[in-house]
Length: 460
Image 1: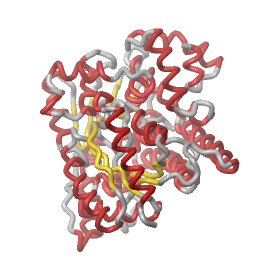
Image 2: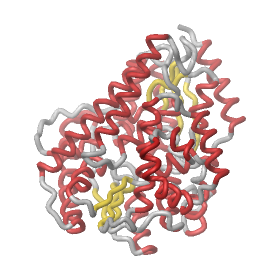
Image 3: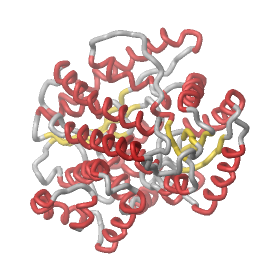
């Protein structure tokens, strides 16, 4: 365990102090000595653990997972969880920094990273949910939903005092929480907006949508105040947003290095770490650790760039990937790199500009509705096309999460638009963003090899 924790960025003194907690949590989660050995091998294979910045990032996820498992027994009396609630991480620092009795976690990001990517042990969590009511196969429930349900069913995390979600992206999320309330007696809350936009008048419609989101976010904060027992002021929210903005700025600088370097200095397996990090719930005291991890990694990558070192060969075909990377399984991104293809960008990073101006912290939080995945398909496609041109990609990996009705419906339209407007190859790839069982190495390898041939042989 000591060696594994070292790969995850823990120093000798911290390990000495925290080892009893780590052992307790690993035992509770069923992580055996065999799993630990496998975890070490996977860390070395899929992640650049020789980089201090990568180790620092991994430390944040292990720490949050351990804290989540032990929250109730270590004196946290108010547990607030979020599922598919993108604004939650923006105001969570206000909750965590006001009271030591409050614990907040956004979904299962830490568990998916540690149990899934490191130990490959998320499948039993998904199977627990499937044995209850989230069936596999033809029904194809989203495995993101199963991740949360399975953790509760297996008693891996204590039940919260409030579980919140949003319908911004997934209309089934609020319905799922209603079922969790009925089945497991978990108090729930959902906040919404209305994605009613017209392309010819997008700015005006956007302002209306943002204001509707603000109204529901204010209701959510009111409900949270009842749970935690203290007022959540606008000044507290601004302080949270200021802390988060520093992390967002650091991540933007990191992405700039990755996007604009040839060869690409780090493999795409790390994209899941960056995306999960931005959604983690960090206190104001913890946010500097996250900023430091990202800045350290950026400096290390800049050094690689100066030496001409990369995760793929110089001149490797550059591609854009649709949707976030797999949150529990790094094998697809690793395979893409093995075959000499560089995933230099992801469409969730693309944002529709917001022309409105406001000092209201609720408006700042509501601007998540401007991100690519939260916009209707007719507006999302121009974002993707603009991103392809800016990144100068040779092709697109149009992967779609089969358990999600929203993004699965977009896939064919995106493919056709990219081919028509840009004339570059598109690989349409069905997968599950949260389930390692859907990955077929040989099948993916064959399809990626054909795709690479199209990229290389494309007329310049």
